[in-house]
Length: 86
Image (tube, rainbow, N blue to C red; front, top):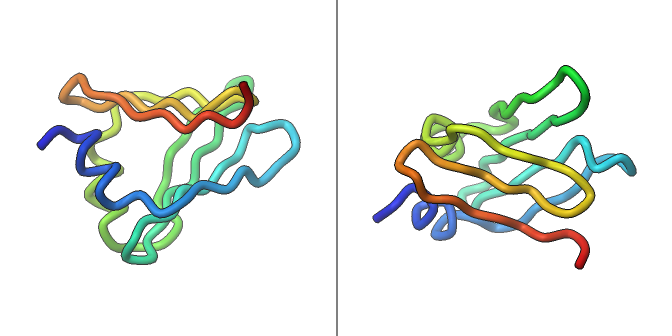
């Protein structure tokens, strides 16, 4: 199973928290959450609520968050994307 497969298995939802699309929270099936921030000079992914998210956080290599999508690349070379607008 790839890191992206594990992410898809646990993924429950995503909520963009600001109108600039610079902060988003991803929730997982066990109630755990990750908070993503991406703006000029800031790019962080951090644990918002413990659980499986703690394991998944350690698999992230990099991510991009903007009005188009949240795009996550994992250390094993796999990736996952949630599109916001077409």
